[in-house]
Image 1: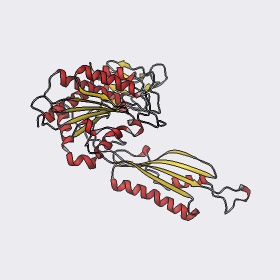
Image 2: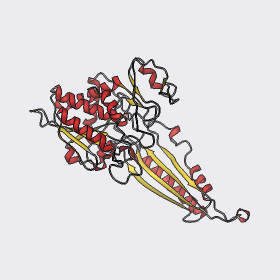
Image 3: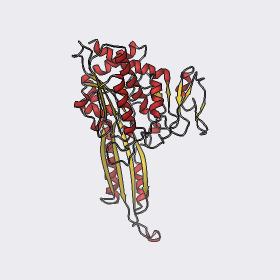
Image 4: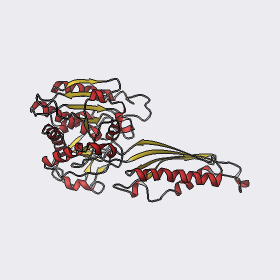
Length: 406
């Protein structure tokens, strides 16, 4: 079975996670795909297959005789789709011999347009998989799941010599939980790869350092007619706090390695107000400076309006995986070598977000991220490229070969 055929099959299984979930997995429906994958892995000959009580799927392909001492490697993808756009009743459609122009997404009124997604112009003649405009496709990360499964089938059926290969599929990546409960002992790999990227040829081993910030404002509410020198308007104070942050350091004005402050939610009135931010930066030093900037603003406003007027709560979320990948940089070098062997020109792009690989790297499994050949994630314009999915599958197989050639 081709990777794209698996993607279409998996996309129809509703697996959205939920921010409101209190257990792992956050939604029981993720077991529906987990159980399908367990059955398929057993059918193609993967060993030690199981799904645990938290919806983590495990499997191993034992080393070819004589290759037992090759470095054990593993491949990881996630089961869930983003919770804030529908992943139910997904209806994938194949667009053959794509002409490079706009594609109407069913009768939804939405159009996949090169004006919004310039890379589409480079895909003329390719085969696309698109949505009907009402749901996500789920290629994030069911394309990665499909490619790992297809590569595993090839390793076994084509009798390709290889060292120990582990497979894992995780729940709840989209809500930041991801690989938190992955049993690394059971997984059994020394080096790993998440297959959760996008553009073909992008091999990612740097991600944002990340923190969340909650800022609470306490006002003093009196009748506006007699408010002079007395009233403290918490809502206005929240606006003042935001205005003191660097105005150009926002997602819509940054790219590449540039970090930002992102206001994600606001609420309030005269009596009280609240702002929620995420803070992102690739540089550990600049990341620290961003947090100190917020602390300085809170301190300044408290000095101006009275201690306790502003309460800032910062919470670190994840760190840049490059810290942990550098000491085992062969995991990146093998991926680059494999990409070149597959006729690709690999590039190293910083992830402007997080990844299970970051969490796993800091848990002791250096884990860069591989492409999936899918684009426009987290919304109705999500699409995958059949030919690129095939090449991403080739990349996984070739990485296994690179390690076997040690």
